Length: 187
Image (cartoon, rainbow, N blue to C red):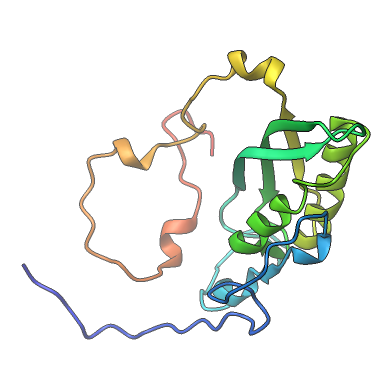
């Protein structure tokens, strides 16, 4: 076994106002103020992107942050608990990522809140998450009547877990972030 401890350390400081790592009280009614965005620039500014695109904001990669909430619940107007599985897709081009603990606390704030319909819940989620991320977030609710149609599948794209590769660099390196040309000439 060998280790190389001569690497330069990169320090990224999270905003002080995050609930992450702090004791918090659970809220039992809807509260969008619980959501906390973390600027993506905190980590991206430590990298040197050499983009071929004309825009200085262009990233040498593409994708989404995918969130799945398996236990989203709220109350209908009669006070009866309702459940759904939540799927959120946050563009990686958004100004902020959504801090995970704040996301969990926010979702829990729906538990004792009455909504007219699942469409109203979806609309509120889309509005709040998009405001936190700084870009439109796609939101889907899978209701119990649709649970039997669910299928687990791999994400589209190249699955790194299946590649037989050797890794010898564990530091951030922007060379790995570019899109590679495939054998058929598409990027």
